[in-house]
View 1 (tube, protein in one colour):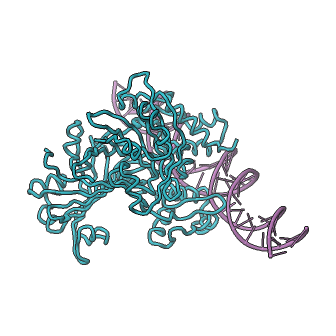
View 2 (tube, rainbow over the protein chains, first blue to last red):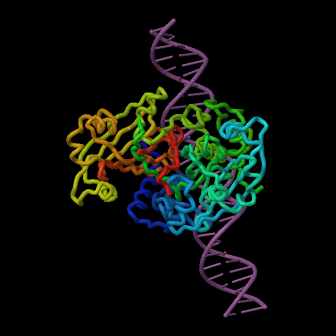
View 3 (cartoon, each protein chain N blue to C red):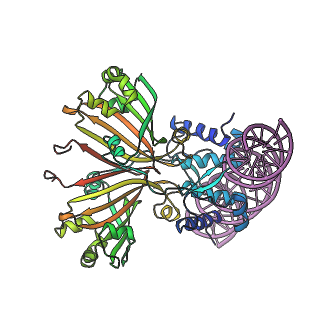
Length: 241
Length: 241
DNA sequence: AGCCTTAACTTGTTATGACAAGTGCCTGGA
DNA sequence: TCCAGGCACTTGTCATAACAAGTTAAGGCT
């Protein structure tokens, strides 16, 4: 047959997992056992298991074994991405905390400068936050903030989520332009978010505008695809074409 | 040093790619050359290259070599996901075609039955389409359609996109509930969409309702994350709390 | 000149072997 | 009894080796 051994083995294991033969959280047979049952070398077994891990169906831990990923589906979902993150999660009884990793004045890259309509020599505040849901790392948030806002509200921004801080200061966000795309965990991301190298991550990149189309925030939130999704409702509007 | 060799090598290559030392579309050094320059075995080199491929930075072809992925960023983006897919792409001069892979009456799985508010024994039409943008495979669309609609408009549905057909029949979609998540290419998907095993895919899963909250469609579109993203605009509404 | 065969080079698959490193259990000593 | 050390088992990393299969280009034949 023309399909490689490691593919046929990983597909067979996938079927066993999906049929419930190996329950979520359960341990898969060790590499040694798989070598015996399929009569192949360890390299082939490792490749097959790597496929499963790559597909998010399993997870390995050195010394412990390979486990079927507990939840194959999303644990948290957001309606109206991120603006309502806090209240959305609170409604579901999920505790949202974050760790402030960085807050400093920098000269933002050109893409961000143009988004925020900043001059070439302007500075902006860069904040990096690690978001935790019920204690587990869920997303990394990277936000650029207009310098006057960052300077004025820095203390609060380090302790609270961005949008609530702005709300308290009566700064109303009128519009958000956002793009949702998806990427892979590189070495840094995989350590931050505690996922294996190459796991899929959802990127939510946005620019927030106040009245008069003035951009005040530009950021991206990179979250674990196995724990997160975005939900939205599209409605026909009277003024739509 | 404690970081594995294959990681440090792939990080080094990643920096070279990002700094432009290897231009998009250009060929990376062959495994043989990399073995020599880094003084490691082929296994280590292959692992390092696999990391890059996994991160979507490179792509390999048997016999040809390893190439830096031409476009690291998204080629097509959609505002108001999928409803306006055709006009959205047309506006950008991108030709959208599709190949009808399947159109048949089936008993839908329980999740779909409940979404479409169908009885336990009801049938529905299942359509699978392979969407092509400018000829290249971009997304796989799987749609369940109410039986009466499928029966009546089957011929058109096989030839045109779903929403235009409904529009022609003056069936107005009032609301769409959608979820965007992200997954990996399994063996089947990787052959359909012509991506390597494990590449990230964006899943757009939706239910479309007409007036009176009657669901008539439920489907999912699984698209290549390296070619596709979803863009949206969130606006403050008068009636929003 | 144009076509075909072949050789060289590429990545893909698979085997065997070895050591490192993390985990957990069991056993022996205090 | 309790703790520490060691052993057994696990996955992670890395080397060497061979063949398969796809691509490309050179060279020879028509």
